[in-house]
Structures are given as C-alpha cells and as structure tokens.
Length: 584
Image (cartoon, rainbow, N blue to C red; front, side, top):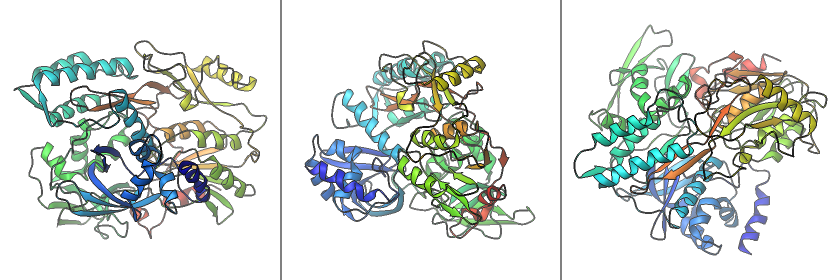
C-alpha cells in the first residue's frame, strides 16, 4: 500500500522537471544498516535531502520489500514524494564527513538517471557476488590476492569488453608487466587500482572505469577554488557559483603552478580514456579540481596555495595570483541553466538536460512548437542516459513519405553473462526482428549495403543490430518540416552522441556549437574477487552508419561556435544560442 501511495504521489511531479528514476548519489554503500553515499568522489554519511531527514527516508524504505538497500538505491524519488518533497532536478544535501565528522552542505547537486542506474547496477553485481550489502574493502591485500585480481581483470575483459583488440594494447603483456612489478608481501588496493586504471584508459572506451569504495584522496585533501572551462578565448576560471570570472579583466588561464594548461592535459592523459581530443581535454580540466590528489600522484607537495597565471584575451597583459585552495570540491552542474520555451522571433527552444524517458514532456513541448518557424534543440552538457527522447523527437522530424533512418549499427561481445536481447535496452535489434515494418527493413537493407566499419571487432560477437528512427504513431505527433538547429558541446556523451549522430542524418538538421565527446558502450561490470573493485567496460562495438566508431571520435558540428568567457556566468550571454538564432 505504501508503494502504491507513493506511485500515485508521483503524478504531482508530472509538470515538474524531475525524473522519478534518478538519484543525486554517485555511489552507495552500507556500514551495518546505515548508508554512506558518494558525491563527486567523496564519501559521506547522509543527513538530509532537501531538508528531509535520511532517517525518515529509511523508516519509509523499511516498509517496502525487499528493504532499504534496494529502495535507497532505486526508489529514492518515490520515497521523497511520499514525504511531501516537491521535486527538482537538483537537491541540497546535508552530509557528515567520514574523516572528521564535520557537517557539510552541498547545494544544487544534480539528480540524474545515470546515477540511479549506476547504483542499481552496482547493487545487482554485488548481489550476484554473494550478498545484499556491499562487502567491506581492504586497503591492502596479499601479493597472491593481488595477482588473483590481476588475472580476474584480464579474464573479465576478455569475456565482455567489446573494444579489446582496438589499438595497439597487448593486454597479456601489460598485465604480466603489472604482475612482475609487484613487490613485498602486501599490495595497496589503491596502488593496484591505479595500475589497472591506466591500462584500461589506453582503450577508447569513455565509459570504462574501475570503482573502489576506498577514497582516492586522503583526509584533508583540498581542491581548486574555481571551475576550468573551455571558451573561444581559451581556458578560463569561473567561480563555482557562476557569479563571476576569477580574474574578469584577464580571464584566460595560462598556467597553474608553473605548468601550462596543455602541459596539465598531457600529464592527465594516462589517467583519462584514450578517446577524442575533446573528451580528453574536458575530463583533464575537470580532474584538475582534485588538485591535491593530482599533486600527490605527481610526487608534489599537497595543500600549498596555487600560483595561477592569467592573461587578457589578446595576451597583451599577464596577471599572476596566489590563491588558497578550497575545502569543497567545486561542481559544474547542468549548463546552461535554461528551460524549453518559445523564443523571440517565434523559434521553438527545446532544452534536454539529460537523456531520460520523459517523452511526455517532449510531446508537450512539441505541441507548443507546432506553429513556430524553426526549432532549436539544446543538448549541451548532456552526459547521456537512454534513447527514448531520440526516438520520440525523430517521429516529428521524419515525414510520412520520407525513408526511415538508421542511426546506429552495433554488435555485442558474446558472453555467458549476456542474453540474446542484450541490446534491446538500446532499442537495437537484429535484421530478423519481427517488429520491423517494410520501410524500416528497406532502410536497414540500404544501410547494410553501404556499411563498411572502420574497425572489425576481434573475437566472437553477435549479429549486427540496428537503431532505426521513424514515425512513432504517437497521437500528438506531426511532421515538423522546418529548419532544426541542434546545439552541441564536449559535454555531450553516450546516448547524447547517438542523439546527435542520428539527427545529423536528417535533411533539415544543422549541428552548431562544438563536437561531442564520443561514447556508446552498453557498459557492463564485473567485480574483482579479492579487492572488491568493480570494473566497468563497453560490451558493444558501436558505429555510425558511415562506418565510423562512436567511441573515440565524437560527433562533429556543421558550424563551430565556441562560448565566450562570459557565457559561463549566470548573468552572461550565450554566443552559441545567438549563432543558432541567426540561422533562421
């Protein structure tokens, strides 16, 4: 009854910008019957979510089978709604430090479906490995156990990693080198993780990662006091609350601690997936927030103030400042912070912050845009999710007499872990699927005839699968036969890459902004038996219809426009949106 009541309460969220299958937590583990949560790589004891006490949440969760572990991971939004939460895309978290017990408040933490799915997948993997609660993780293991996990790492990749064989990585040789490099009776888990992580990053899988419940940093670690973002002027530093540039008259960051930005990016490269240049650059700039961790890995002093060299946009003047580090890790959050509307000039503006299954919101927006003279679809900063919104929007942009469009062709590595319907979660099916109609079969036949993959997957793989855009038959669907501009940037990843790659094939669509990062994985995970580390990697090799891989490339734009430095401020402009409007 409690669960039914909460489901009914979700109706109150129908017109609010919140996904019922979302979470603010990057990780969830249990100490006895009490939860510990991870937010931006740091673990905390949760106290309250938007003022709702976690103890209240747990009491309600206990009333739902099978209990608090599953419910906190997968059903947080229904529980919050039952407790009269009003709903929003972001929440304020009251937390307690696990290091020193201090109270911490993190404001505006984004609620996403991807986070909730990661918690769900992690919980399921743990259940399969032998328990409902996450096992405790040692900080050190024996030399023998470390070698067992190295072997398990290699075996897991061979079993399910689609991109094994892509590039010049000799997995067996690299693992043997790691094994031979271990010394002493005990091996640090974080040291082993770093070795395996760097090996995994040599592939182009942007989804790949190795998770550990041990904090990567140390007690007292501090962070950059600003956000680093790429602009038309170069890399700039923005205050975390987006109120101002750190150095308004000289906004361009030339160097930090005597190293240029390009030098920092090169130093970060071994720790970032070997993907597109824009993916590497964006992630390297984001990782620099963990400046004390970075310094420690480089063997440098931690805790010291920063020496930052700024310059004017034209480079004529240079300013050097010493800045104290921050006790809080700055967060980017969704950007730009805009909502769907009709803009001046009667141009529809569809803002998609995350790829979720809220197709009704898309249909409602498209109903408002029926009489507009053009449409802008803004997916900047959208890190992915699912593909429902792509299929729904495609139904409006393909005419009744126009052919269906194949947007993605993929195979998955054959493994006992994967069922025959492994790619149906990505709305991809074999040519033999009975659900295709005649014109969809015609599109698949034409795509198959022209398809020449740039790389042939190595090993045993499934038949080819296809994602097809077509009219959906929704009651409110109509043919939007006017120009459409899609705004993109390097924050676009995963399902958003597929979104861009499919829509760019439509005749009236123009991509504006900057190239996406590039990723399409059907990411799966396995756990190493001795350390408990969780390894995630791509299970499918995913291609564009022209044969290019999604991973490692990204989707290029038709018209490149980079944001101005002020565009990252709450009171700033939007050069990319302005450029899009000028096309109508």
